[in-house]
Image (cartoon, rainbow, N blue to C red; front, side, top):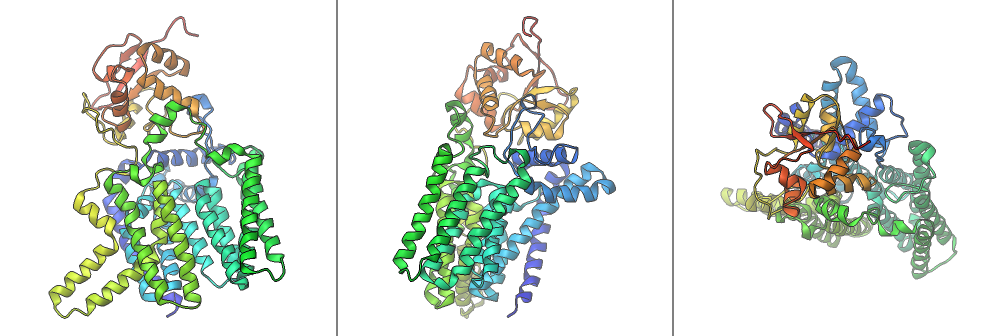
Length: 587
């Protein structure tokens, strides 16, 4: 069984999955209907860079009067920009955009399939690795991040987390340790959301040394590589802002914490003839020192990047973004899709651990620890479910292989067929239960169940905001969630979108649509907007109407006339638009 024999299965599985995804997404691709506002924002970021915006400036200058800060990393822009640069001269920007929006997510899908299969091969052999290729496209949280048009950073997070774990289970050399560090450095540079899984992987690597000192080269290689490469990538991607404080992205405080942990781990490994308990204690001291350094240099970061949100923004924006909420606050369908497959992976992994010995048992021990940890994180923050599902592949493949082996022993053809189908259903319980019960919702902004139906023709996912292109370029005052689409589909500028560094912009939009017409008038005039526009039937506008039945949006949707807003009809569009009547007394 050689590694090369796995590639045909990976390529065939990827080709089938890619064709199916392109087919079911063909309409969305043709019309450029983004799965999430973040995907529209990512496209804007790449195009702005290609059109001359600085490599070190990822702000969106068509928002909040040109002062809309962003914390995203340029690393994710690189593959998209490469595809666009290749195809722009041949097909033009519009076609090049669509090629990039399809090709790059499918490349990440290929990477996840290949790494998931290789990880499974290392602990379970070739046959189970092939089953991992089958199982990965059946994971809804994984496909949700790897489908066409999904160009945000979450897919790449899964790729580099898988790469780090695959390297962890390789021969414990300095080279495999350096690969762990490289993968985790890229992961952290892409997004600090990767910090929990990074801490878990590094923690497992150094704890493995505590139980087996021969793993010292890998552990040292990992901690030194991640610290050094994170620092290098920070300098390369932040430019003059390398010393700026930040809790939502790599900053000097985070680098200092990593450096402290690295020095502490190194010193712990230099202590001669330490007992196992002493080694564990020394590692705990290193971790505590790193946390203390972070707390001293950036105490606010210990509370998380969203601690500074004001009450209005937290309640009506952040607490309604379902991907950032715990599983128990999700719809039953979304919760089942998130945790069903990881639970199967843990169960299968436990059986695999019991059946293994020696090096294989050590590998399963490390993998089970990481799979369990990632499941816990996904219970707390649903967006982490994709990584949890990816790390569940080896255990789920083991479980499926065991069930299929038993099914093949059934003599009756009919019963054998049913047993085989039942094995696949049992290995993907989230998908099966959702098919039976219905998803009851989707990954995104939570619905407001008590809200009445819209009084006007409803929009579908905000796609109709493209109709605003009928208006001459101007600043549009629009709801948070659809604003990235307004920027992507038109030449307009806008006020605010759902990105937490811009609390004032978020507060202004929320308070305006839910406030009284008089208070809203002052805010809209101060924003410099020429038009106010919104989509009836969207989750956000329904929330406005439900929370503030006498607020600006509720009155506008009911058809009430506001003296400072002049209705502007858009031909064939459900989007409601008003021109802001200039106030001669407002500067």
